[in-house]
Image 1 (cartoon, rainbow, N blue to C red):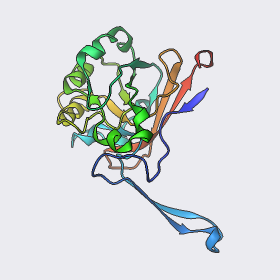
Image 2: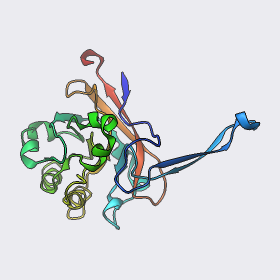
Image 3: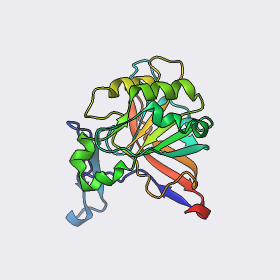
Image 4: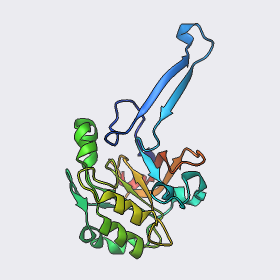
Length: 226
């Protein structure tokens, strides 16, 4: 079975504090006498479920449209449960516990459980969400060369409540290393477990020149464990 993990885009969804979201304007409507419907959509590229390419924190890094297609297809995803709440961060110690599982993974999905606050408390979801520490990101890029991406069920790798997020992005996106790990942020892992996840696709808008893009994330799940 297949399950969509990315959120539908709408004006009321939480976004990174101070940044734009999505603006949808009708350009022609059948209800107004037109023969067809059209819309003009203005979309911030870090809004909703989205994927950061290295260009996000490296001027010399590849943009989202320059990544090879295999960077968006994950045949060996691993999901780990690391519960986190407001303003907390994933640490090296959290990750080290799962080292034997992560070592062969091409996608690491960190399920914090924080997504419950996306609809219940959207402002706090955006402003007080958890993140991943820069030291943990350094650990990931140095210890797990098979990783193409990590995925998170919170709004960002960064926690808006602390100032460690920029360095965390720089580590994963390859500022200090020859390799990089892309970051998929703000997805819904409800119903996805370590046992039922088989394959994941993260498909962006291939817009030339931009650092990152909204993505449609689809997981293939094992029916026997759903």
